[in-house]
Length: 317
Image 1 (cartoon, rainbow, N blue to C red):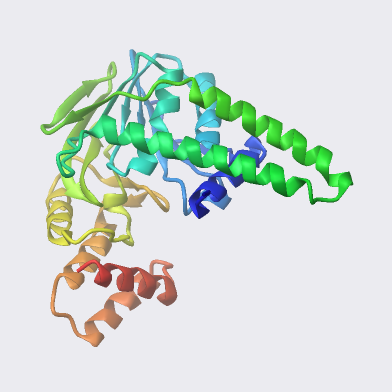
Image 2 (cartoon, rainbow, N blue to C red):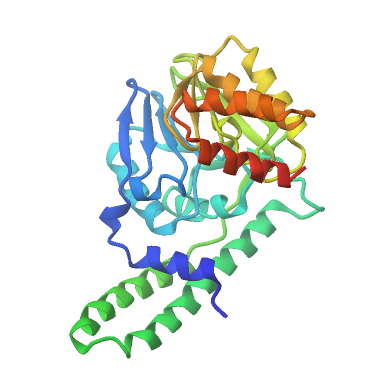
């Protein structure tokens, strides 16, 4: 039976690929930030393509296969060196699923993430199952849509049949790809790209373990969901997450941050997620909650959005 997620993914299959085009922001000669298309800005994370003199690294993936295919084409048009690394900042299997397409396009690239410690389950095995379920969801949604098209006006059926045929071709192509192999790390990792270095370090944050990546040469820190200014809390161990942010804050080797959602921000704004998690982990008063709400208002976060995120966070405690 097709799930709502499967149907939603199928809708993405039918979208014109141009509608999923990301915006590329050149920061310096080494660094390009990749901002998702506006209609996907709350679904797909920011990414970064970092090029040295010998190698390139892509920070983060996601689970939208259609958008990943377009990303691959864009990366190929911009690369001047081989893509050697893909660095995943979190262990969300739905987001990690897209690395299958990245590894298919760049088979020599090594994919790194933090060590997966979920109920004795192996990461690559869990990811293989996630991808199989996603592809099955696509297939079920295709079959359901074929039945629905027969009831559409005859004038519209030709256009829909063309879209379905394109979706089928994509699905066939994806089924030919091998399940990705991810290398897990539990210690800091130094990557030399050629006159430009990256440091990847495991941490505790969004949904448990993850990575943050520092680029000392231009003062960047890539932390994914863990450093979102307004944290979306989907796990109970928020104290470890809070301690990670405090530890990052004390580092002198960066001055700006790229979160998963939203624009890059200065290190000084790291106080926002720290204050959010600090209040969440304390016996706070309504007045303290309102004071933090007012702080977020000054950073263009509405009261409604703040309240929704804090309510979600309290459910996890």
